[in-house]
Length: 164
Image 1: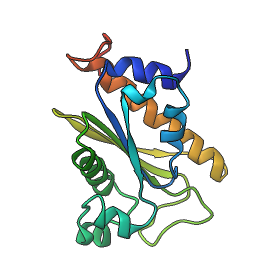
Image 2: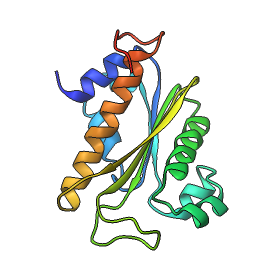
Image 3: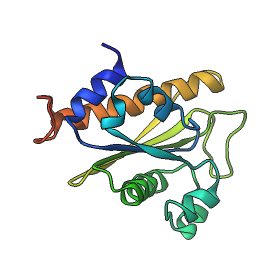
Image 4: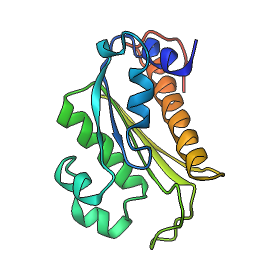
């Protein structure tokens, strides 16, 4: 069973939404490639620009300016914003640098923040992926799906038995 199928099964009927910056919709594309995913996946926002993060997802513009788009607090705000906007049970958000260069906040290529949020908890993971642009994007997609899977399996109302 591929990872997307496992994630959808682990969600146990809960709805999932995504807020994607550096992956540009890749997570949504991977999930919707699975037949029947429409019962779980509601959609996503490709928030490549700060304008979309602020004006569509409701990320505080001051937070974007202070912390930078590639940061833990912005990733968490993206997850909260997309979950609220789309009225979903679970949200995953990704922001990071796939290349060719770093940012003004000291983040290097491969720096990625992945946020998870459901009705009872949220978390952010920081990663430092290696490789070219597509490799960083691919590793981000996989790590985001694994994060959803872990939390969904740990949830009392999820279908899995895992724990964090």
